[in-house]
Length: 543
Image 1: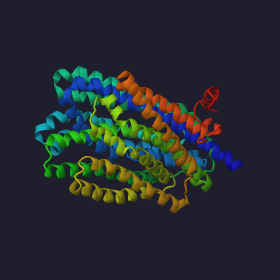
Image 2: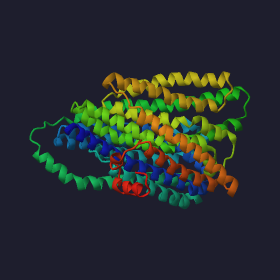
Image 3: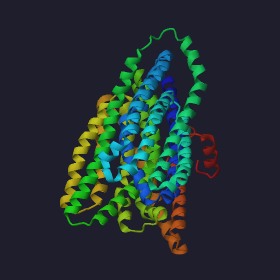
Image 4: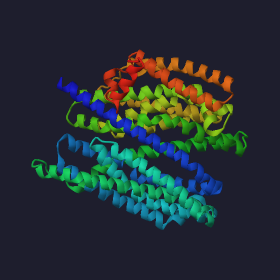
């Protein structure tokens, strides 16, 4: 009974913290989508081009300096928390800040100093002078992002996602306001400086988030120091060992991120070169690829916020249970996280398959059959990537850091051959990338599941995790299609028909899920405002 109560509490914590983080992530993405509109109008296509070039370099440097740091700090803090080791919790904070200041200072400083040379080397002398101002600002941003990653990892390790969630929103709000403001102020000096104004917003956003988390940490510090003074049993771990542990956890995650970026580069290289050899025009190649990256991938990635957030929220509880030798707790947390990820991912997949075209038309004004077919064919990417995300987090939570990396390398090889064959011999143009994206996530799911079964005997429950959400989503999909068509014929407005169909779909899916007992009343109580949700559902006779 005691073990069951512990698992119940851990499950509720994952759902609460994951939901908080998912909502914050959704709000941040929405703000990011909105502020790009005025920024685009101020900077123009040329300015946004320089902005994009600088971000391409920034993304690589970001991975090298930051990728894996929050996870490493989170795991160390979770381990100390499981052992009631307050002394070394504090030392982990100090070690992580030393590590991030050093790495962020070196990489950020070198980027600022050699921005011109880097731009010239990567993009050529013709563009270098216009990219350099933005890249210098982003070099400073790396330093703040490094410190930010350490604080976020600390609070996540304590089992709370709220500081990270709030800091995400603060960062994006300041980013949005100052990107547009600084671009508007500097545009008079030319497109390159308008682009630099946009990157100044990014830098100020990161700084604002750092300052917020420093304030939160200072508020928490007296409680931590009080526990440190009472801790008479823990032995201090050398700072050098802690920084070594951070590096050992970070490196596989960083390499995995690099593999993912290599995959994107390989895809774009194969696609552009093979299609050019087949006689496609440069304009058509670029247009199709733009539809794939800026429309299909952008929309498909939106529903993944829940799986990503639940995966992050799950790691501290899994790490704590794993350190204590609580295998049942580890399995329960993984199973619960994957199940609730599927409750969101499966209907999102069906929704994109049915309404993908109308949604693209609503957001981007694109009515082409190409994007509609991309959404229909590639919609399963949402389910598969959600499973991949949760299982990768689970492996990281049980200290199997190398498994996701090895699985990514294997998947990259298979994916590359598959995409090459489709492009070269099947003349599938951009749809080869869509099929390749789905295959990549599918193989990662299989390999990650195999790794979890091998190391901890993990086996997922099927009925509530997959079958009931799929059945409820199928009913929803049929109803959504009918509602959309009826309102489109009646009102001749894609926007109104699409919005009404989405709202009806959400209600029908919720009703079917509850009627099929896919979610119980007890489980709903675990969510934020669960009591209020239960009261509403009872009032409308769904519970």
